[in-house]
Amino acid sequence: MCGIVGYIGSRGAYPILINGLKRLEYRGYDSAGVALQNGGVRIYRKTGKVARLEEFCKDKDTNGTIGIGHTRWATHGEPSDANAHPHISKYGDVVLVHNGIIENYTALALILNQCGYALDPREKTDTEILANWIEHIWHEQKKESTCTFEDAVRDSLRTVVGAYAIVVITPHDHQMIVANHGSTGLVLGIGRDEIFVGSDATPFIDYTKDVITIEDGQMAVLLEKGEYHIKNSEQKEIEPAIEKVLLTLEEIEKGAFPHFMLKEIFEQPKTIADSMRGRISLANSKVLLGGMKIHEERIARARKIVFVACGTSYYASLIGEYLIETLARIDVQVEYASEFRYRNPILGEDDVVIGISQSGETADTNEAVKLAHTKGALVLGICNVVGAMMSKINDGGTYTHAGKEIGVASTKAFTAQLTVLSLFALWMGRTRGMIDENKYQILLRELESIPASVEKVLAQDALIRDIAKKYYQSTNAIYLGRGINFPVALEGPLKLKEISYIHAEGYPAAEMKHGPIALIDENMPVIFIATEGEYLDKVKSNMNTVKSRGGKIIAIVTEGDTEISSLANVVVPVPKVSEIFSPFLTVVPLQLLAYHIAAFRGTDIDKPRNLSKSVSVE
Ligand code: G6P
Image (cartoon, rainbow, N blue to C red; front, side, top):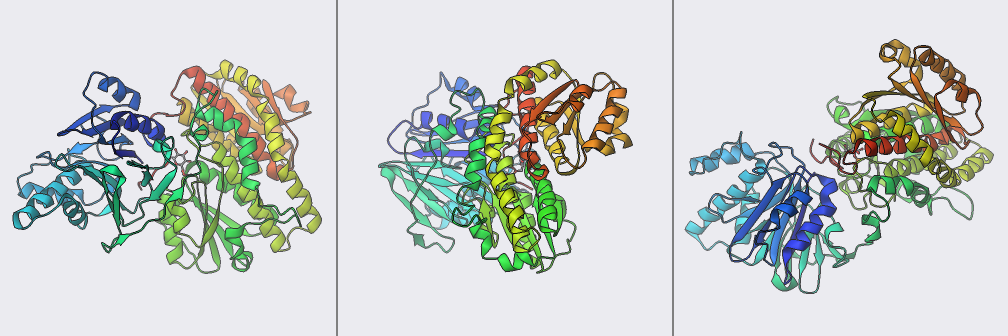
């Protein structure tokens, strides 16, 4: 996904656009660009991060009170200055930024070429074609009638296929047009005599908290002096709701932390508590999940539960599988959303499909959810971003309330997902009579104490940093875990790969002997999750196997352990909790380990190469 910004008012647009783009960089950072209208339109674009664009613009004319900007995550066309947005049309009449995909851009290019445009769709991006398409329609319509800029944008979009949010300007009018088709990332910030545009509200929350969401199918014309006109897909002008955005500046700033990722790791005691807040009734100690309760009867008699998700959310779902199967005794299936969609899955109205997503914008997950709907399953969503697409396409669900996650590598969103999944499993277990009241109460109390235990794990930061210092030059790593900690042994290497670019793999500990063991030598760090639980003896024997082949063992153990400490090269102790809640504690050292290793390697931790915070293309 890309980030888009806009400003129309009486201030200089440039600093607003640049600062806004910096805040949206988590969405993509392959290139950045701005266009400023001031008696013509000037466009500045640069490959790489926004700071590079800012440097490039230092000695340029950046005047103008109308402007648009873009930070790109490349999907069509390589990251280059030429492919960076904003794009301008052939005759210079249309300038636009775009987030999403124009699917029929090749067909549009063919028509344009018949009209003298000479655009090779193999060399041009979908956005470039779209800018020219709008211009072409404008020119064609002007031949027959008076056609405004607004008419041209609206009419040209009728033939455009895809999911997109766009912001368009022209050198000929003091206005800006925004349109949304199938995208969730487009909001207006309403100031006194000015309007801001953003993929979300972060670019402008220091100027205004009044926000209008441009919904799917809507188009808005923004004028100077803060005037706006929004039309729905039937071209009827609507009176939109203005909402107060709750986001604070503190939430989107790093404070004393060097990176957002570290800040977000350290926020986890609070975010886990926030995810629980109001969901355990004080009066009768019961789980309250409002958005799911209405479907209680159908969930309780479900034949199976299917999770669909991607990335870190997929690993959280795998832990959900253990939780639900253990506590509620229902068959659970966990699917990569992208694969699930193309398998013609067997689903019916006795099944419950749960989409899990931090952003609620991941295209594969949302499409999987939609597919499940067509098959008659009850569809629920667990997502973090309030109002995201996922919250609009399901029958019910719940938010994780972890607050804004800016670091591209997901951390606090993961433990917030575990919190909601734990509550859900406990609720189902009790509703289905699979756990008795006594056990239910004990587990609820224990869940409430998890934030304090996570705090204790965070106190091991210095130890973990020392471990990172020793191993940061490794080129490979293996992570091993069993049972409910097997998915943690998948999430750990994902974090390491994402931000340090070290090749790492996670396996069920016992599976190691069926192949990965061949990789073990004295240079291979092997990270074991070896906390107390059903399989600890088995994990110990796997550890002995690694030790006898010279592997370097880093083990996450339960406080008080002495046995593993004698086997491993180094141990990180975490507090003792019931095995089903142990992932909350075992994942934190792995997040910190990945963070410190990446810091020693000097990578760009919050904006790792090639990644995007959420992937809204299939
Ligand atoms: C991207 C991000 C990952 C994330 C995944 C799923 O790949 O870089 O950190 O886990 O998308 O995102 P979601 O928003 O659906 O949880």
